[in-house]
Length: 412
Image 1 (cartoon, helix red, strand yellow):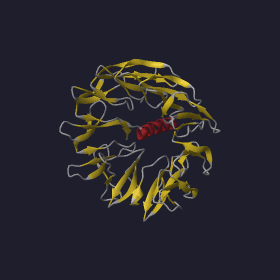
Image 2 (cartoon, helix red, strand yellow; image 1 turned 90 degrees about the vertical axis):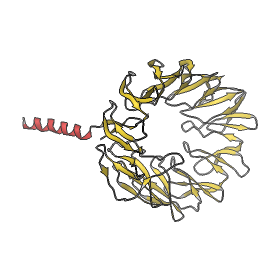
Image 3 (cartoon, helix red, strand yellow; image 1 turned 135 degrees about the vertical axis):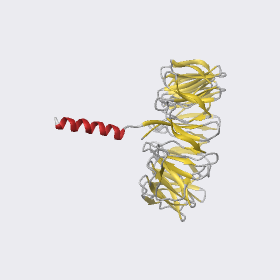
Image 4 (cartoon, helix red, strand yellow; image 1 turned 120 degrees about the horizontal axis):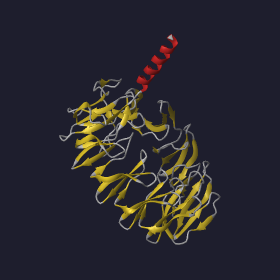
């Protein structure tokens, strides 16, 4: 019996330790930010001039009325770390908070990173420091470039370079005197800087431009797999290694072995996404797959990149929805269709927003002035210029009373 109670107590305590609550940043009608739960319960008063989303560890970055930045927990208590003066990196029109449980910060003109608990994991010592793409960022200290992993371990890049791009799929393009090459994850130069321009490696292939300004595809040793003869070329499709290229007015489908097939009547194309690319014949657009087969015929005004197995297609002035097998799920009745998120797709009809499911069924009738995507079971929605929060039945769980409401996150 004693063991039974011990086990029950352990389970209960474990559940409480790892349980999370849904929280959303809200802006009141005076322009001040705070935090609430999706049912409208205020947990942090609206007293900040800016507020970013909480991490899963229960920390958020806020800006106080004196314009200084601080970390708080969901009890509105300040969270301290080894830094005394810092702020999130600023971009042209915004600052960015935590992303994948890490935040790029600047302190005394140097860049570093905090983790989701607000702890300094990469001390601010870099004159330049990129965002993370996968497991790595690129940093610069005293004219030397480094590959920086998520634990803050620096690997010096052994290339003479005046710029280094993101490291993706094991390789990072670098530039020296207007020529491009690549380094690998160890920082070693694996392809010398001999190209006029290069792309990122996709499935161990990348496009590159030779000295004459022609484009082809190279492997990870810099060998030309597809001759540099194209004026335009897509990124290689990462799984099947195909591409599309254009020479003058001629468009070719490029197989993995370099053989080509003329794409009759095609005048323009986009990059592959999830194995599919849009292509244009005359003024109309369709979709081809990785075999070059037409999945959606070129009969439409505009087509967006395939996302989560779906394609947004415009005919005339209205949008419909297809899956990547060419099946139409939503008719051309909508002024706008967004991407699938948290199982639902935002759609706009007759000036109002609602939601469809992945099967193309309208599950929330268009009745809102504006909406955001669903996250963790809730979406921000507005009526009469005021924002609140709805659930997946379209009911307001938070009454619309705010100037702005962001996305729900799960936090401690």
